Length: 294
Image (cartoon, rainbow, N blue to C red; front, side, top):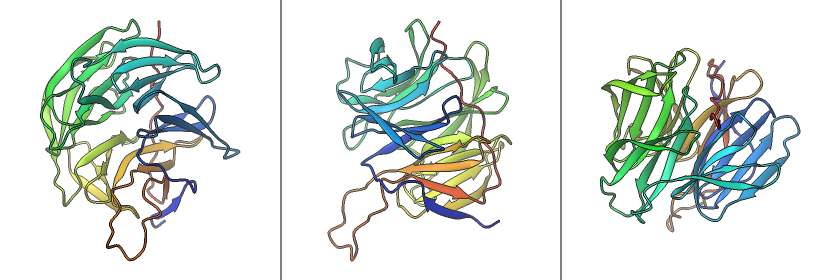
């Protein structure tokens, strides 16, 4: 079956990110970072709900008690979509007003792994990667980053992938799924503006790493040994993150952002910032990890 790409919904956003599948409610969640809002699409009815926050929402994850663990600028909060109740869990880099929480996911260890980015331009290596557990304890995993991104885990949970979008590298760590302990690290891939610097990512059931090439308008698929085995050209210049979703985890959705308007463009860009459904990829995703609140 050839690759086909269609719009999932008609709405576009300024910076759509962090698509996350919730199998319990059959909903696809995502955030509009600059819109400070989390959205949820009912997969069966196509109804959309949303929840607004008081600052930019970089990412979030599902929890074991039906709430969301949400990164709101420099705060990690537990949020109940049913009631709107919000509880502060932790704070990250409050001493650095120019950084904000960016890409993050719940790992196989039940902790929330989240990185920051430097919001200034050009970016400086002042951001970091952190692990936050259910007690709210914050552990810095790495510093010296510009734009932490691309978190994902192998099917066995024994490899963690992590990227920095600005220099374009993707690294792979040995990972202990029960404790979240990291082992040896290796360079997994080095990307450029031309072939797609890494943004958000996911891993399929065969262990392939799917990376949104935010600088080249592509979705890159890497084998477990770091070879780029497929590149899918997308109808927008800046995709942000892929996610396998649907009841069988065989639907692939990619979010995107709206770049600055080009005043010389013959036609306005009406697709950027949208969500896109890719079919014909012949891959399935992995179950979503849950944050352990206890």
